[in-house]
Image 1 (cartoon, rainbow, N blue to C red):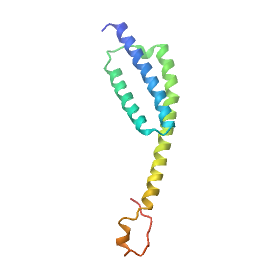
Image 2: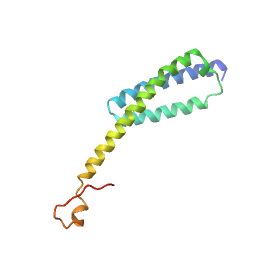
Image 3: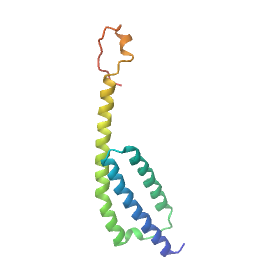
Image 4: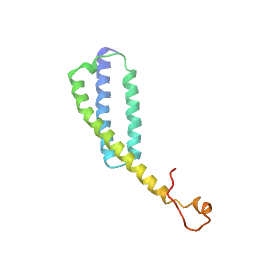
Length: 119
């Protein structure tokens, strides 16, 4: 593969990376976590393709630097929203577990005394 072909391929992969990053933000904002995780996997595969490219200097070009500057704030938003979703999910899971009746009735003789318990 010639240097020009490698640079062209790197450019395509970086553009796809930017597009996937935008899509990640869109789906985490909608709380569509199944699609979000699929896109995370795709982005990971894209990173592997980028690493597999022969050594090139596309990353040092102004075009790539500009693209990276667009990606950075999107990544920060994605991380913030993903953490918020994870915390919300944990709170909901803990709330559900606090109402779990199985296993507690036998321990207290079925008298209706139920204590919140930590799992």
